[in-house]
Amino acid sequence: IAYLLFEKPLAGVKVMVTAGPTREKIDNVRYITNRSSGKMGYALARMLRLMGAEVILISGPTTLKIPSGVRAVKVQSAAEMAKAVDTHSKDSRVIIMAAAVADYRPAEPSESKIKKGAGKLTLILERTRDILATLERKEGQIVIGFCAEDRDLENRAREKLVKKSLDAIVCNDISRRDIAFGSEENEVSVFFRDGSSEYIEKADKDTVALQLIKRVILRLLSKS
Ligand code: CTP
Ligand code: CA
Image (cartoon, rainbow, N blue to C red; front, side, top):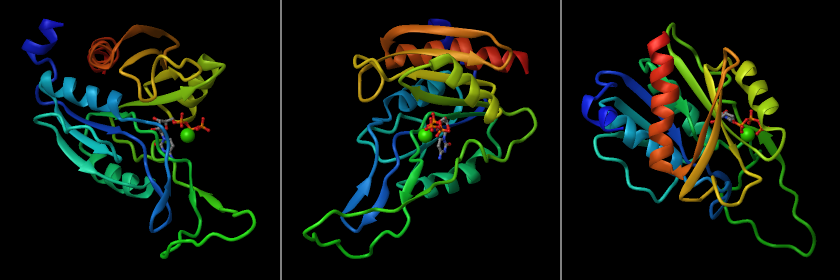
């Protein structure tokens, strides 16, 4: 690990990381979001920077501090994140999509506060764009997705790997309450396009980030 930090193996490499949840407006005081804290994506951004990479972090709303030396673009909604990714992914060698992007948003957000009535309230949701699946890819780019599954992990992860044409996918097991969402620790499985996989044992998110860089990102870069 000391080697990774002091030798700066990623010097000159441009990496874009997305992190955090998105917020989808219901009205001017309410929104839909999810439990992502952004910690895993921020840990990756920080460690990538410490290894010399030029890091651009596209972040949904979080309370986390932007890691030193990292360029950050703050966004709210999935649509804003899509726009920022389109702008900044073009010249990135490595793209890491750790954000928990909302799949749906209110179809008709209200400009004024919705007042309560006697009965039920129905919200109509529409799909957001799948940023990763529709990303305009450049020759030689390495693209890594994330997923969070509560069952049938490997099959679901591998399905997404193929469907979204990824080089690797990092999978969180959200059936476990001690790791992932909001937690200080994580433990992940990584599945590669060539059929191989890596298991990264439970540790604080900085350590998991270092392992991901060493065993996934540097490995993919050395092969390309
Ligand atoms: N993703 C994205 N844009 C979306 C939804 C997801 O870029 N609108 C990205 C995530 O950042 C992640 C990957 O796609 O890297 C997988 O996200 P996930 O939610 O697991 O997959 P979905 O295709 O949305 O499938 P589902 O939520 O139904 O399991
Ligand atoms: Ca999703």
